[in-house]
Length: 67
Image (cartoon, rainbow, N blue to C red; front, side, top):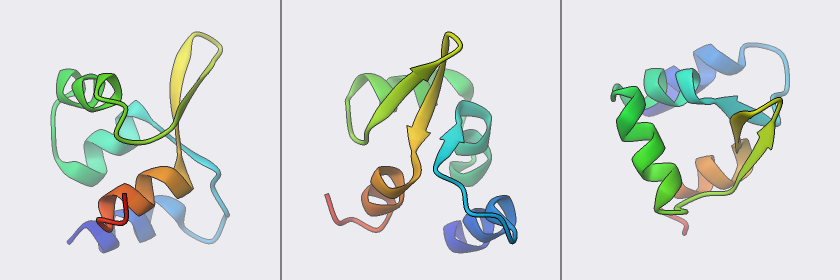
């Protein structure tokens, strides 16, 4: 299920990060829930233009249970 969401978002381009909205879509959770995960520091994030970007490799590893 998650793999299909990730593949759909990535398409043919190589992404280095996800937005909060993309994480919402992948996991099927609310925006506050994404921020709660970010607050738990389960994966790496960076701030860009005052918005969080979730580092793709870190998130994908967490999603695969590799953390």
